[in-house]
Image 1 (cartoon, rainbow, N blue to C red):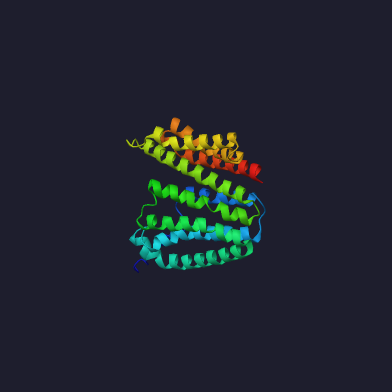
Image 2: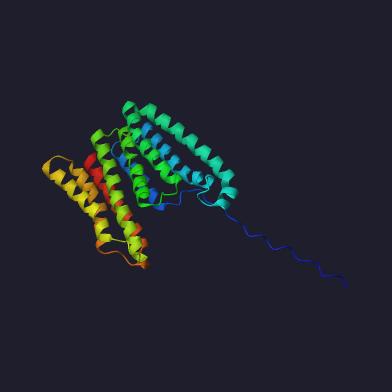
Length: 271
């Protein structure tokens, strides 16, 4: 009898390459909603669309940078470093070219406004370098930096300085107070002793009360108070009645709903 022939080797499992998209899902909304608002304040000009591409490319490049410097672990740095380097160079080139187009097409006011997100990004750089981007200060500063992109894009869209600045301030303050409370809600769901939800809700109450007082006294735009209301009310509601751990994902949907409401209010009141 002839020996049995060996069967075919089993196929090797396919290993999917690591995604180089940013892992911080909340940051997508913190960038996307202000940018959509800024364009909605005017019209989608060449300058505005170019700046949207520039900010989006820079945002996506963040994950490749973290892989390259080892913040995603040594294995990711070894295995995905070359791919991350190529993508980082391509995204930074795209971002720089788009920012140049946006600035030239937008004019002096847009170029000057670009200094705000640039300065906030520089302030965030040492926090990222020290791997402190998930700290309270890191997350709040990141939310403010991403929200600040509404200022140059709003101006590039043809909005007034007051409208573009109001939109940027609303998103920065709204996301900041929500971030503070959500950190407490997550700590509460893990039964950590430092949740301190009552204390964490104070900024939301102060911000909303201050905006309303300015609007009523005529010293601030009504859009500031109206735009801040959805996110501040959400923050106060979460602090007053934090969801149980099994429903913690509902918090994200709540932020999206409040963000869409804020976008609608700003587009209706600032155009």
